[in-house]
Image (cartoon, rainbow, N blue to C red):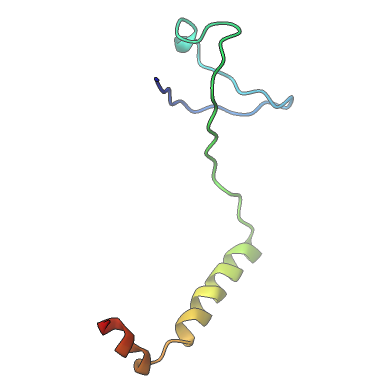
Length: 71
């Protein structure tokens, strides 16, 4: 099995453009498996929620909990 990695954009009609340099590697009607990795577009409220979650988690930690660090 072989893998290719390249940046691309999804077009308005939901198609992924493959760079010309791979035309000789990927043949018409060839079956392929696609893995899509993308960055989440976070809003400021998402970031605020994440920050609050971390803050509240550590607020709930007490010095008395350090006994569990030795297990």
